[in-house]
Structure formats: C-alpha cells, structure tokens
Length: 466
Image 1 (cartoon, rainbow, N blue to C red):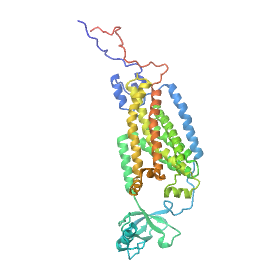
Image 2 (image 1 turned 180 degrees about the vertical axis):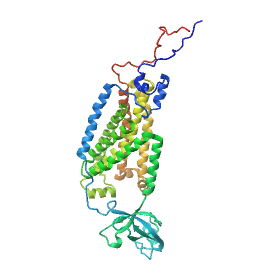
Image 3 (image 1 turned 135 degrees about the vertical axis):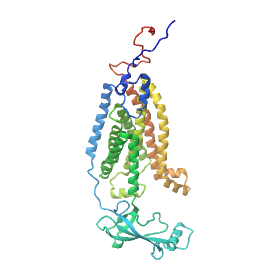
Image 4 (image 1 turned 135 degrees about the horizontal axis):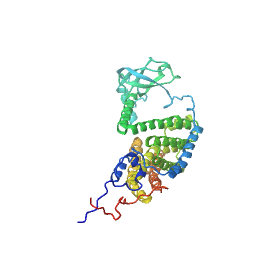
C-alpha cells in the first residue's frame, strides 16, 4: 500500500521569513506569521527591517532635511514675543482673577442699566431689549479681586436679564483692569473662570490615552506637549517678530512632524517613509494654498481678532498667516493618513513576502480609498461645525449659496478645507507608492522569498513511512 506523503516534523521557514522581524520576536511557524504581523499593524511591534542600502538612501534624504529644519529654527528663533503697549481692546487687556461674593436682585430702572433709551416700539429687537432692560429685574453682583496689586478690592457689576453670561454667588470670574479709567470703572467682569473643568477634562483625556495606549499613549502625550511647545515658543513669537509666516509655518510644522512621528512610532524605516509622504503632501498644500489664497484675494483679516493683530503688528502678512494656519491645521490629519498607509503596506508584505511593489500598491490603495472618504468628510464637518454660527447668520439673512461662498469669511474656510483635503487625498497614493517601493526592494546578498518552501529531504516529494 502506497503511503501518503507526510509533512516534515520541523517544517522549514520559507526563505526570507527572517527578513521581516519574526525571528527576532518569536519562533512562530509560517502559518502564524501573518497573524503576528497583523497584530502590529500600527507600529506596536518591531517594524520589518529593510536592507542597509535602503536605510542609507532614506537617511541621505531625511538627515539633510532634519538638519535644515534645525538650522531654520535656530535662524528664525524669536526669543519671545515683542513687547507692546496694551490697547485695552479684546484679548489685549490686563486681567485678574475675581470672585462673586454677594448677589442681589434689583430693579433695572433703579440702577439705570439700560444703555439704549426705550422708544416704546417693541417691533424691533433693539426696542424689545431696551424695554426689557427698563422693566425687568437685574442682578447686582459684588465682585472681589483675587489677584494683582488690588487684591481684596471689591466692585459692583450689574447683570441685565437678557445678558448671555449670568453670575452666581461664589462664581469664579475673570476681570479686566483699565488703569487709566476712573476708579469706579477700572474693573469689570469679562468672562467666567473655567480652569477647573478644563483641567479635569484634560486629566481624563490623559488617563484614557495612557490606559488604552500604555507606553505608546505616554509617548503620544509627550509628543503633544512638545508640539504645543514648538507652536507657542517658536511659531507664534517668530510670526509676531515679523518673520515670513509661510517659512515659519513650514519649519515649525516640519519640526513637529519629525518629533511627533519618531517619538510615537520609533526610529524605523516605516516611520521614515511616513515622514517623506507627509513632507511631500505638506509641500503640495503650501503650493496650492499660496496659489488660491492669492488668486481669490483673501486678506486673512476678516474679524475683530485678526483686525486687532494687524493693528498691533502692521508688518505681519495676514494672508501669509492664513496660509500658515492651513499648513499647520492639515498636519495632524496628514500624520494619521501617512502612518496608516505605511503600516498597511508593511503588514501586507509581512503577510505575503512574495508580493511585488505593484501588487502591494494595489492592495494598500484599496485601504487608502476608504481612509480618504472618511478623512475628507471629517475635515469638511469639522470646519462646518466651527463656522456653524456664521452659517446660521447667512441662513437667517436668506442669502444664496453663491453669495455665502463668495464672502471672504466663508471663502477662507472653503480654501482651507479644499486645499487641506487635496493634500490629504494626494498623501495616500504618494505614501503608498513610497512604502511599496521601499519594502519590496531587492535586498543584496539575501535570498528572495519563493511561493512555497521545498521539503528539506526526500528528493521526489515522498517520504517512506517509518
């Protein structure tokens, strides 16, 4: 009776199996290789190594780029924001902390709360508001200054019934200080103190990131702090010092990209490919943004805050500041897309080492198309949500879609959204192609993977039954 061929007791690993880092991680059989690789799809384990030659090529591109970013930061380093005389307008006011220590109800007419004399005509919003202020019940709040040279001093704040910000006894508030005003008018409540709930929410966020992400989460939080430091210590002061906003944004965004990606995902070829894909996409966003911001004649000076900045620092290029915001705003989503695409290519190659660059690209780009659809929708909804009050105003005015889109306020958001989305869409094929070329490149001196491993013994594929 002819015996059926039996598999060898210790089946050999397919050639090239150790090239993907599994031999260094565990002694899994080939059938477990893809599952093991899939569990590290977002960089949770060692990335598959590439040849020394390819590592040298990547380093030859990234090291000069990182050096240029470092030199750019040294040259443009501002050394702090420039000093100026406070105008007392908007955010440019001296502020102190305060607390409501007493609260009483009073007749609005007795305290002359109305700044607009009532006309008796209640058909208009101003008339109804003036009438309510004269006939309604106001609140008389006694506020104690808690910080600054006048700590312990109290002043009175009248809160009208229709005011959007109401006060409560014991409420922590932010007060503005106007030293040149008469003594009774030097202090006024401008906002509520929200530090405690914001700090609590930030703590919950940090705990959630660390609990779920563990050490990766810790590194992500550190990278977040470093990114915020680059923004506040370099980008913003450098722009205020008069440096070109576009140059500052490119240098600062590149520094954030290098620090965040390598800190979160490790100093590997996989991360380096994601950095290259992000860099190419940022350059595309910068070029398109510069072209369409100039073509659409967007000044970047569209509200009170930008008007105040332009008044305090007239040398700042406001359109360049708008472009800088487009670049920095797109960076966070770009990192996510490029890292995901690079990881997808690496894991596909680990699952099937025989796949060539074209097959890898076709398989990974299908993943990228799903990512594109969700990310573009996310960007549009994020900008629409931020501009929702503005869109409501246009809806109330019964303005046409063409008139709404043509206004500079909305046109800025349209350019910001579409330029960023084009960069995100372009990052998928660019990063996927780079990753496929790198991971599937021939490795000199190493055997190529074959579709199936030959038995170690038994020349004709049959072994005698023992």
